[in-house]
Image (cartoon, rainbow, N blue to C red; front, side, top):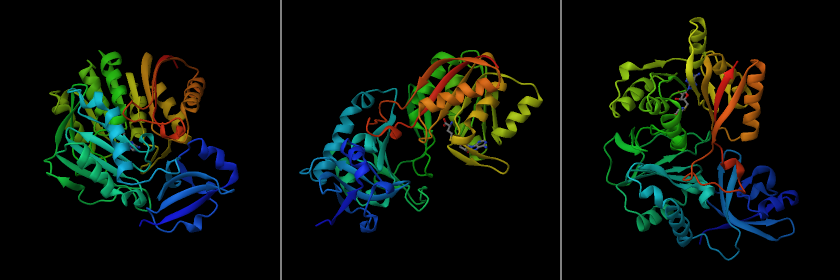
Amino acid sequence: MISETTVTIKSKFSNKFSSGYPLLFKDAILNLQDLQEEGTLLKVIDDKGRFIGKGYYGEQNKGYGWILTQKEHEAIDQDFFDRKIQDALDFRSSFFNDPNTTAFRVFNGEGDGIGGFTIDYFDGYYVINWYSEGIYTFKENVLESLDRLVEYKAIYQKKRFDQKGQYMDEDDFVTGERGEFPIIVKENGVNFSVYLNDGAMVGVFLDQREVRKAIRDQYSNGKTVLNTFSYTGAFSVFAALGGSSKTTSVDLAKRSLSKTIEQFSVNGIDYEAHDIRVMDVFNYFKYVKRNNLKFDMVILDPPSFARSKKHRFSVAKDYKDLLKEAIAITEDNGTIVASTNYAGFDMKKFKQFIVQAFKEMNGSYKLLNEFSLPKDFKTIKAFPEGDYLKVAIIKKIKG
Ligand code: SAH
């Protein structure tokens, strides 16, 4: 028998949970001291003893666990995992049937009914991300479901649940036939070189698929493009394929140079025709200003928090200033692609940063397009912070 613990919710939060909010956060729980062993099944009740839901204990950022069902008689068993994962697979059937896109998210945590883990698909390989020790105790259930429901070449996993919520380094292979990496996956016909056994990041962030497509198909033809915080240069590759006259990719990490060369090369693009720089973006901005350079398009996709030798950057505090840097080096009638995956504010707040940045630059702009998560990153209305991606494509009129 798996043990079950009862968790009591403070009265002021019972409505929130009754209407489907799935994340058990610290402030809401009256008896935190009863949470002892990660993975314990929880019965969640209000302070009058009324049933709210069932879930499990697993610490993840601000969360202490997830509610998985609001039905008192629904068991959290193998059948439950099978049903949720089957529904998730069905929801992505159009992706499985599209030969031009062979990398996408198959299971998106609470968006698909079980918070705490995700599954991504890379051309026959499945990668599970575990965000707490608690959900990891259900590993055999998830593997069993995948065994029953899909054919796979292999399954890999990323454990992201040490104290800091960071990736824990180890051999990520779980089962199947070990891959030889890189494997080449496709996204809207474009190749990505992907490594599933080499750290938490595999080479591409799948949630930006629609933005990359828009950059290629609508915004980059004939344009000079600056891609900041470029990682493996995914935006640059799409811009180059869309007819950009030259891309410049800037990232602090040394690995970004060889990785970006690789992504250009697997798409038959001559990387020497493009500029790839390993340096601090903030120093690059200074260099650009000193030399009076301007770009037709500037892409901003910083991490939520970053620290380099000289700079400490947090999206919440510094995005407006980052935008001002971009405005200063974008040609009039040029485009700024402003992106953030920071869950701490919503699109409305993000747009206020844009308004404020242009105001402080005495500039003006037009919002051309906006994006949030693509369909395979399924979210639920009851958990708006799960819908973390915000991208605005802006035309700078002047500034
Ligand atoms: N835009 C990328 C993903 C960015 S991930 C894509 O679409 O694939 C964030 C990247 O920012 C990391 O590669 C990290 O090395 C880089 N980075 C963090 N701080 C930086 C800084 N101050 N200057 C340049 N790059 C930085």
